[in-house]
Length: 301
Image 1: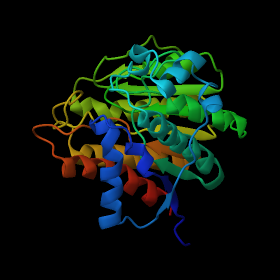
Image 2 (image 1 turned 90 degrees about the vertical axis):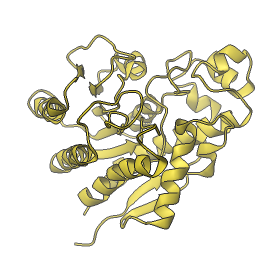
Image 3 (image 1 turned 90 degrees about the horizontal axis):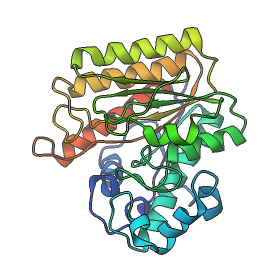
């Protein structure tokens, strides 16, 4: 059987803002690596920009207008970025890619976007390098397109409190959150689990146990929105956990995509956290994020 291609969304608009930080730049680094060293099975696609009205389906109109206009500046910069007019285009493109990936995954089985900086954003403000919450936007869009049950699988080093604040009351959405730092933690509930792992040897067993519990306790999901963080790697900056190697993260990616494939769950993935540090250079960070892309294409065969 021929391998199905995996749509992956990216646009130069993803890195348009002047603010220099991994979250505003690394999608272009990963994209350039795919140009120079292609992965078989990746199908490049450009997303459409989300409209102001679409953003307001999840976020407060006053906040959305602040990001567009820069007024008030404190609100426009609440995610921690210096505001400039290009930020508006950048975040509409990056979040548009996340929404597009969710729609494409429902139709084609698996899709991704080279987006990051999503899961901490609240309804009325940004937080932790996240301007708008693309995970919540993607979940809402998937519901409009007929998804009945959605799993948000958040494996960033930091907790996804922003997503919880936006979607916890929606009975169609479940979240499994396995983190290594308690930043942006929230109180778990039956549909929203949160594990804080402090040993590398406990990490994969915790992820596997949470997925196994879903098989027993949850409905079959139409879509998994996967926030694939690499910031828990032992050489990454904030969130790093000693003993979390590239090999362990590659096994995690295989575990996630194989679990979804066996259960016939569509997957929409994004890059999430991962940062250059004194012990992890740009090429090393890109190699980590390529593990997600490689696992996605391997599982789509």
